[in-house]
Length: 151
Length: 299
Image 1 (cartoon, chains in turn yellow, green):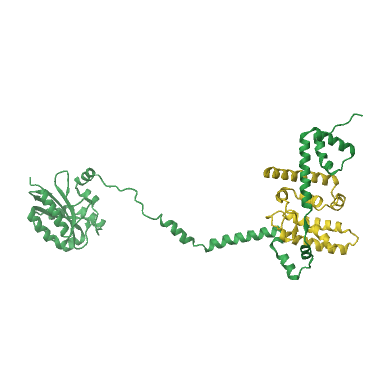
Image 2 (cartoon, helix red, strand yellow):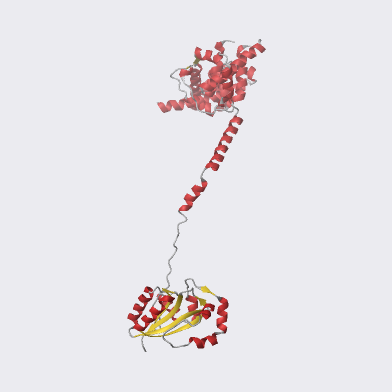
């Protein structure tokens, strides 16, 4: 397992919690689980191990992960474009169901392949596409509203 | 073979795959035709494209090397304990239980330590002030009617004694021996003296008399002032020198026994008086006499 692969875990927990502190704690826990799992199952691909770790952590935290106020800053180590507006994502993070939030971060932001997601998570491609289509429309509508409001 | 057209619903369902280029050529062409044909399909397509564009910008978020190294560092023992004991990592059930215990503890502490007694006294303080609902005074005509009937029974009803001792047993004895006592009582002498110390100790008495005054109004006022000066106080409900319907003036008062002779002398200066000492069941305190005097014009 490479440190470069740790960023996927960090980014996942960052986008689902929008909290510097909590994302670091959860990412560290998931990362060390990955390292242990790699020792236990060396034949497994790193991406698969990462997905398994994320799914394991998600089961524990999905019900209360969105509680609290979003608190993060670029100074904490997150490198995002200054032109990116986080308000549509904040709104989505609060209102979407846990399944939609989970799959959107993995597929649309972290760009995990659909085949890997169906294989590891046990979801059909139709279910994944349906959820992605729905969440994309929701986020798109929020972006358009914000753009029409600012123009 | 007739070409099947896609419905609006199906087109919308396939829009996401169309944007992702996941459709076969035939369906892709059908969707394209539907996009050109329907405005709402074009609007929906635009929304999906906006969403994908936004998510694409989010996917470009990176993580600094420092942060990666920070997370990758093995935690110290203290760090692990700190993480375990961190409130954020506690299970929700434990958090809720702790919060409930804290709230209950605060409520119990406040209820035990708060000065409720002082608070209650403070609240009740303002409520304990005396409240006067109404002041009632008898109208004059009613008072006159009541005092005009100066029989023994009415006197008994109005008399408010100051330190009087009532003796019901002796009252019954007096009623029985009334006939024998009457002959002793009806003496027409001007001076009055206490006849028998033993007899007075057994029963009470009251002095009655009628004072004939030439100018009764002026004399009555003088008599009233003199009685007050000698230490006399009204014994009934009516004031000293109350004018009755008959036209005479009524004095019902108590006076120190030591002042009796002074009062008798003053009676003589005003006019003539017929004074009698009648038994009465009510016993006055030692040294105090009760008198019922009326003043009137000479007939």
